[in-house]
Length: 314
Image: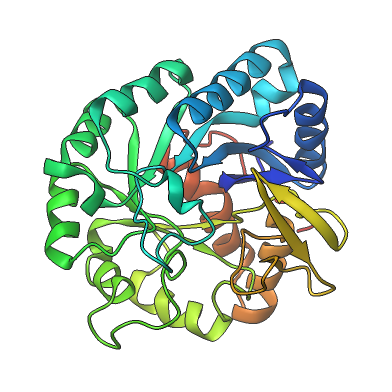
């Protein structure tokens, strides 16, 4: 029986996957809660950090996954989001700008080596990949490459697609609130949507639902993936949480924000909650919900379902 599949999840149920002290007991507990909430597969997501630190976090997850059957069954791979992203204000999002850096084959191979084949998705900014050499390298090695936290021009995006880029990460997020009203990264990505998979956060806070509906009219649903971008606050109570070295505040609305309140920091919404909001806010049918929360992510990862998909709460 197959349930939700989340390509971007940074933490869950009070557990921060980006913590340098992440333990096997904590990771097991988070996986158990995910399973109870109708999720049976994720890409555990690690965000921008110093390469050496990121490498150590990757190796720690690989080690724990080998030691625990539940962790192994839940974590189907890793999503590395950064550090090869734009350091510019707005585009950097909630990532630590001090560690954003141009992509190099040496650093990318160092992370891949630590992942021991577990890294399945890398989000980077094409303009931070000189000569697009890392995109080509990842594509040739079977790793999915996604654009995100980027201000790439349309020509740069097209060149990256030609080099092997296949996806855009959480469209309409990881960018400034104020941009050129016509030529901006959202419009550029949408203009190339026929060549890209598009992931979207459907919590109503990252993208208002009427705006999400507008985007979906352009993209259609066949190459859209709903991701939670969940942090430790997902499936937990309002309060104070961590993602890496950052403190995040979650109010009664369940939305994680920076300590200054200036920007969102991941999501506090579970996939089950997102599915329900797609149903109530956009009138998605059960089949459409299954498509974007379960079938499409597996199709993207070439983990096709052979059994009927059952969504918890349907």
